[in-house]
Length: 260
Ligand code: ARG
Ligand code: ZN
Ligand code: CA
Image (cartoon, rainbow, N blue to C red):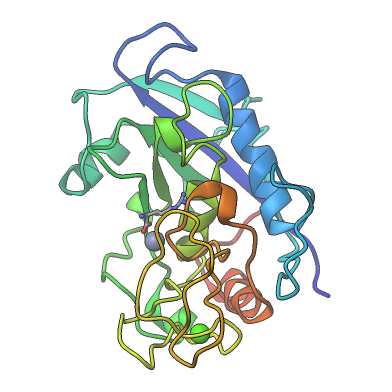
């Protein structure tokens, strides 16, 4: 077991001018539900599918807390609401989006919630030298560090949309933010996500297939892994080796120097 690390979180709600709780200006309850889900998933606790009982599942011993103090030392609920200058966002808008509202990424996990143009979310990976494995993308700008999630895939109440209505998109993107690759790695067999305890697969799962598809080596694929592409109700584990990777990033990255 490791020391429990608590990550302070700021949620930037980039909305289209609706009243709080409507449309893209999601409610505080929706935000709080997402934080609860992150704590369930990263601590391997009861989740909305029943207990997290997958035999390969690990307690990551990482917890999340909405910030209680702003960078200026002012008490806060950890939520910043800002009207955007675009109504729908895509990855080329990354810098524009994040320039609207941002807190020092050395001290907070920044989560931007907005209307993404037909996809669920994305993340900025940590520095390659910290992770020690090849990474997608080269941008390691501290001012864009964090994750972006569609307002209909955030939390499990309010404006969420099935089948990505159980908050697993943020769990998945924080996996990337802490250095994890998809379990399908480079998409070839044998593939590599640099975790020996996730059976190699050369495909991304969609839906919740039963029977489970087979991995490269003929065993059942781990479609329940948060780093696959299955529907939210299927997902329920990170493995021990995924834990080690995330904990290494937390221990070594200068950008992840969290204080509470
Ligand atoms: N497609 C997104 C990505 O690669 C997120 C997938 C999240 N899956 C889910 N069931 N919520 O980063
Ligand atoms: Zn992903
Ligand atoms: Ca693997």
